[in-house]
Length: 366
Image (cartoon, rainbow, N blue to C red; front, side):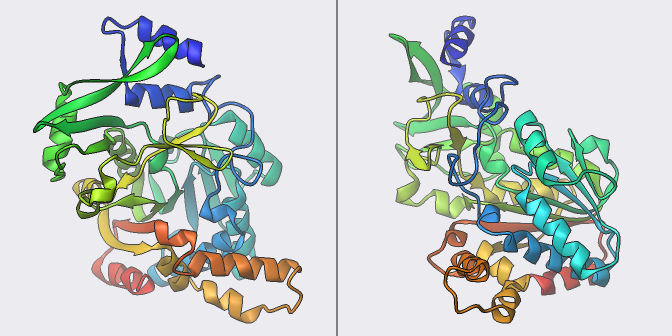
C-alpha cells in the first residue's frame, strides 16, 4: 500500500494528495484497502470494537423497539443496514424479530467489502429474509428503517487548519521514503462553502476534518427512502463542542490492535482510520433533503428507551461465569454513564410520516 500511495503522489503535478484521497485509498482500495482485504477488523482479534458487537442484546433491543414502531405507525417490516461489518447486529436483530412477531421481515445489508460480505454469509442465512446488496439504489424506493452504526466516522475527510487568521488545507506528500503532511493555502471552494453553510467557526491554531462526502451519503439515503425512519449511531460533536479547547487538534485517529494511533499516515492499509462526525451538519443536510430531524440522544438513552432494561430485569443468574451473567455485564457496560455509550449518539430522522406518526416516534425516543 505504501508504494501504491507513493506512486499515486508522484503521478500528480503537485506531488501531493488530499487527506480525503489518502483515506479513501488506505481504507477502500479494492485490493489493498483496509476494509476491503482479508483480515479480522472487529472484536478482540481485530483492531477496534463497536458497541453493537459487545453483545447480541444491542441488536435484540433495537429489533424490539422497531417491531413496536412498525405496529404503532404502520411502517413496513423492512430494514436496511448500511455497512453491517461482521453481521452480528443483523443476526441478533433477525433472530429477535422472529421471536417477537409473526410479521415477515425483510432485511437488506448494503455491503461493499468482499471480506465482510463473506463473513456475513457465514453467519447469516441469506434468502427471502436477509439479502446482501451493493448500493442503496438497488432497493429504491424503500419504506421502513435505514440503520447504520459507525458509518459516517469512516468516511474520507479533508483536513484544514487556521493559522494567522488564514485557512490551509493539510495535504499528504512524500519525503525520504515516508508520508508527510504539507500545509498549503486553502483553494477548495467546497470546503469554504461547508464552513459557511454549516456555521463552523475555527479558533486560531485549530485543525479540523471536513466531511464533504457526508452529503453524498445523506443524499443517497434521502433519495432511496420514500417513507420511514433513519437511525444513525455514531460518535461526533456539535458545532459548539468543536469549539472547545480540547478539540483544537481535530479528531482524526487510527486504530491498530486496539491501540489509538495519532499519526494516520503510519501503516496505510493496515489499520482503521476514523474521525468524529459533524452532527449539526448531518442534521441540517438531512433537513435540506426532507429527512426531518426527530431526536438526538446518547446511545445509552436510546437503548433505555428501546427497553434494554427489560432484558436485564427478566434474566438473572447468580453464576458470574454463565452466558446470562456475561450478557448482563454487557448490558450494564452499554448503559452506565462511564461506559462506551457515553461517547455515542443516536440521530433519528423521518421522511413521509404525518404529524401523529412523528409524535409517536418522538414519544418512543423520550
